[in-house]
Structures are given as structure tokens and as C-alpha cells.
Length: 144
Image (cartoon, rainbow, N blue to C red; front, top):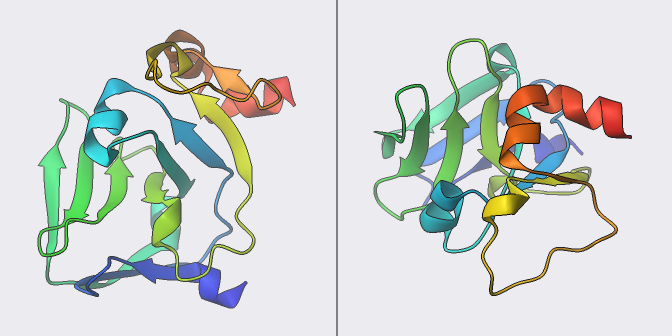
């Protein structure tokens, strides 16, 4: 699992290291994530004090809302990070880890915005925009 603690973009212009176990992977089906990724977006998160950029020469941030920004590589286009603000953990694209062993799927969120061209698996936990907005990560503890 030591390799799962580092990751980066496709071209290597952005690299990071985490020093805490990542939270469960979320599949976000919101309209923004679907537009940004071309489908739903799979991400995990860690507290900001457990996240370190080790290379950021091609990192760019896009303000996707008043309170949130998305980090991506300006060279290869890899979508990497989601920052909800100073008090929230940093979201990290699950596929950007060098080794994904040890990452565990947690839930589908914003399922009421899912594309109508695919079906959500009924056996996995699901939260609407309202449900996730009201509880966030705490929702996972209540529903397990």
C-alpha cells in the first residue's frame, strides 16, 4: 500500500503524496463531474494537512463554483483534485494514484443527476444531492 500514497497526472507534471489513509471512494454523478470527466467521477479524499504536492509545474486550478475549485494538469489534461474550501478534505481522483490497491469503494453520490444512459448498481449505497449535501461524509457512517 506504500505506492498508493503517491500519485499524479499522466505526463508527470503534477505529483502528490498523502500521509493519511484515504477515505472511501465516491462516484459522483453531479452534472459538473460528468462534464469534467466525460462520465461520473471517482474520487477519494484526505485531510489537507495529510496532502503534499511534490511537483506542480503544470497544475492549474479552475474555480468551479463560489466555494470550490478543481485542480488539473494543464499539459496532459488529467483531472486530479477537488477543493471544497479550507475546512473540507481535499478530493483526489481515485485513478491518479500510482497503485490503487487498498482503495475501497464507498458510495454513489448525486444519483438524482446521473446520466440517463447508464444504470446505477442497486446493491451499492446511493445518496441524492440533498442527502449528500445535508450529511456529507457523515452520511456514510449513518447508512452502514
